Length: 88
Image (cartoon, rainbow, N blue to C red):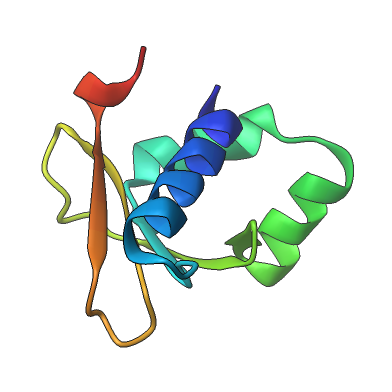
């Protein structure tokens, strides 16, 4: 569920801004659940390289309760917020 949510959000980001995101700012709760969900090579890449789908992960404890993660580019120009309400 957590992996697919990130995959769908990355696709929506590319569709909206016509280029791929480079950074994911996510809450610690979401990161912990993502780590538990992954296995094999996906888990190794997450732990060793701190990335998922080519996006660098930044854990942000200042995210609001409803915000799961934020996709953004390296310059911080475009941001795509993903909320708990979007999970369906």
